[in-house]
Length: 240
Ligand SMILES: Cc1cc2nc3c(=O)[nH]c(=O)nc-3n(C[C@H](O)[C@H](O)[C@H](O)COP(=O)(O)OP(=O)(O)OC[C@H]3O[C@@H](n4cnc5c(N)ncnc54)[C@H](O)[C@@H]3O)c2cc1C
Image (tube, rainbow, N blue to C red; front, side, top):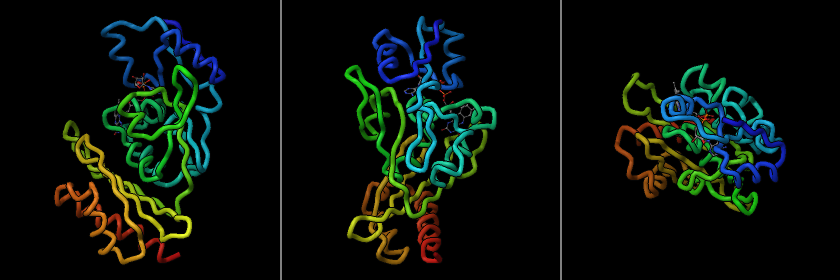
């Protein structure tokens, strides 16, 4: 297997055109490749500046989960900090998690930030939304978002070998000329649901508005956790 390390978007595009398979930390693909055989050509984005950035409003796809520090919003940091084991977090990347894993703990966090994805296609780099990236498994270069007023992340305890634990991500955004808006995204099993509501009312009213979105389909246990998270983030804003 030849591993290419493009240093520019046009070089990455060239690798793509040659059929290079994207690789992050190889935490998922290694075992499969050992069993089924290695591809002839692979490419890692770790030398590509755009894919390696960590900032308050941007995150590169080649960034290792362990390197997501205080510069990114709390909700993303919380999501990255609870993925797998320390060994996995020191190797696995943002792109591998969002596009390549079935658990995608980062996805609810990125959804509540209303993040836009920058991807590379045969015609060049462009922006799109996260559901499309996940559905079409685009080559992800990175994410961009606007800093929220507050954000939070909760992952329920998981039994080893059991179903994926419930994840609830929240973020409150300032809206131009309007009331603040609360976004909530939940991973229940392997499904990710999200919804948003204006937060001009008290926590119970906001929760009732959220129940009229896709989040209304959640089972009662998950809804209780959402209610607690909604109350928590609204309280934290009120105290400021
Ligand atoms: C023990 C263990 C526990 C785990 N626990 C969790 C957990 O709690 N929550 C969770 O969310 N995940 C969990 N995972 C999955 C983990 O997040 C993934 O292993 C990891 O995110 C894959 O990242 P990687 O960089 O190693 O990807 P790789 O193994 O390198 O690649 C995986 C797939 O993603 C594709 N890919 C890689 N980068 C890109 C890109 N930039 N654009 C498009 N496609 C790309 C590859 O082509 C490949 O198909 C766990 C994994 C292990 C091994």
